[in-house]
Image 1 (cartoon, each protein chain N blue to C red):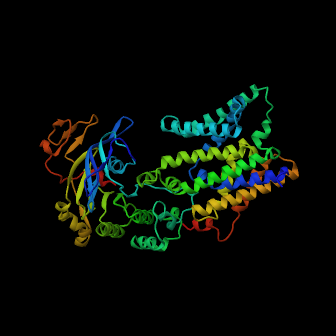
Image 2: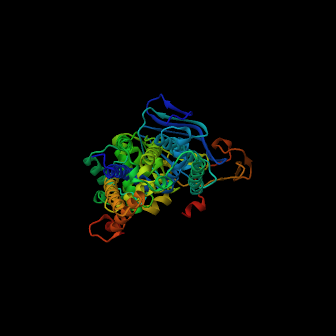
Image 3: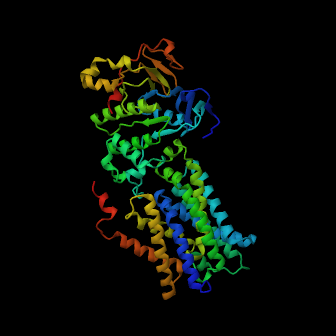
Amino acid sequence: MLDDFFTRALLAGIGIAVLAGPLGCFVVWRRMAYFGDTMAHSALLGIALALLLQVNVTAGVFAVVAAVAIALLLLQRRRGLSTDSLLGILSHSALAVGLVLVAFMSWVRIDLTGLLFGDILAVSKTDIAVIFGGGAAVLALLAWLWRPLLAATVSEEVAEAEGMAPERARIVFMLMLAAVIAIAMKVVGILLITALLIIPAATARRFASTPEQMAVLAALTGGLAAAGGLFGSLEFDTPSGPSIVVAGLALFLLSLLPMPGANGRKEERR
Amino acid sequence: MPAENTLELPGQGTLVEMTDAGVRRNGRWLVRGVDLSVRRGEIVTLIGPNGSGKSTTARAAIGVLKTDEGRVRRAHDLVVGYVPQRLTIDPSLPLDVTRLMRLTAHASDEEIEAALEATGIAHLAREQAGTLSGGEFQRALLARAMLRKPDLLVLDEPVQGVDFAGELALYDLIKAIRDKTGCGILLISHDLHVVMAETDTVICLNGHVCCRGTPELVAASPEYINLFGGKAAQSLAVYRHHHDHTHLPDGRVRHADGTVTDHCTPEDGHHDHHDHTREEDHAR
């Protein structure tokens, strides 16, 4: 079954979407969309460095993305530049440095479009193993960390006062995000990973009344978008990443339609 | 959180103890020279004008802020329930009141129901926390902190946004929690002049500890009883006082008699007593 490239892509896409949904909820709740974007953009730098040093690409991407995230956390502590500006600098610099490095390395053939926008032909059996193995590990970690992470999302102060160690939760969350970026890169592409984190979460918001419901719904919506997008990609010969994002966008737009009984209604009460 | 200046308290009964503690941010002392302790079953109320360091002191006491000088000691395995001064829930986060109750506490449905009942918001159990009014949300936050069965309850302006009758009811509830569980309570009053009658110690801050004492002296104040009536006086006490000295920008202190000293301590002979009023504090 796994010999068919499309089955592999489908499994990979759905696996990634199910993983990205719950993590994406935290990205939305914590207003970290731009932060996630910055981390994803630095993935190209990770690829270039991994090729240069001849180490495993997924591991290289994870290391570089995690390093950028930790650097951001440290930079944020120094007052002066706003987080927004810092992210603006880091996000585009990381992408630019990555592109320049890749251009220099004339001895390796790199499919840049595939890296930036995803390529369903690129998913190997090993990738599937990495996605499901790594994904299961990340989801288990997230479940374990759920309570402190959610407490810190509502209030860092309350979490700190009540012994929830919000700093540790935040760092582990960054590492999980880095892991998702590293394993999602091939299918969705560097430029569009953040969309897979945010759009399903935003779609799920209206139908959820607890954080847990929203996380599950985001995973389901993401999976649906991945399947829809990949079929579209196969049918119309479009790049897989943008196709998945377009499918996700369509679901999001559908969720905006007026529907009786959805939670969005109740909130208009006041 | 094991900060270097945080040690565990060996003694029994004392939950938190600050000795000559100070917090500095961006080169400015927010609060300095604070001595404070909260014992089991004790209610300590912090009052003081805006920016006097009340919240800073409370946050340093529970380790949310690190102190830059002095010492903070907490009892071993201290369970804290905290109602912060401000808390906003991002509209993107779906969180009904029942789920909010379980944010950091492991509570059963019955316990949650009882806590919401006690704070008078049982009918809001299924509402989204973000849609509550200010007063309702304060009650929810108090219920949430209660549910942790804390040793130390830290309440930063717990009755803000609550109407007067509700305020009395919440103060009664806070007293009841103390009586029933024997926890210590560190309470910040949003009104400089009003503290709970059950308060054991009132500490007035103004960048440092200005004065401290029991509120009894004040509870009998005739102006207060005239204003709110005898029944209110059972739940609330007024603690009126003037600041007879001015803090100069360089940290020195000018007293009512015109002399200037480096510090202000009750012993330096420049303070008469605490029975005076500051106009700007009434402006709130």
